[in-house]
Length: 234
Image 1 (cartoon, rainbow, N blue to C red):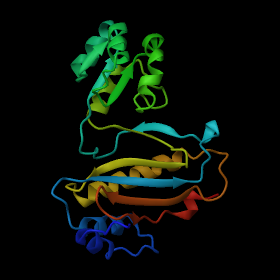
Image 2: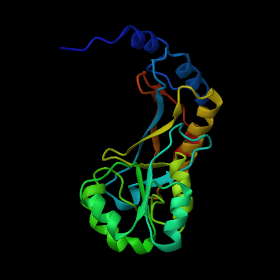
Image 3: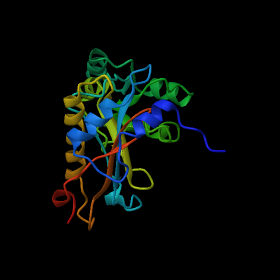
């Protein structure tokens, strides 16, 4: 049996033409006009890309610090030793260590959002693939979570730096702010992320690259965003 949409959702949906796409500024205004919930909803960006993630060069993955952040801080741990460990702790890592921290995580402790590591620590961290991989928390160079400068990584991820990657269907989903954000901040974050994805377009992709771009709040309908075809197509 179909679930009946709430009055709020029906009212919000009536403000969007599902057959249209809107310039970023207009899409953000429409989103801002939706009735709000009792909590500060996360605003998300979803992008359908013309990619085949089974091909290594088309399996996009990365990390980015949005111009205005996401409105949410993250709990970061660091696999490091010596001065790097001291710097990571000073930068705000909630746990820092090497083999002993690996053992703790291996034992089931995953009460953190992001794990970063110095390259030399990967000899220990490599064994955590089965634990952290399924949760998307495994440190990797592509996402910027394996780096000699763990202190900077800790600061950036703690402040809301986001990781993104294509799913099996070639989609990318990422948070771009909160409903409480000023509309201009959401606009800036959306445009920044679109340009970042455009810059990562694999050379092997032919035809339209960004097939659909949608912004939505956690409990709202989606609003499709217009993308410049001249820049996103061959």
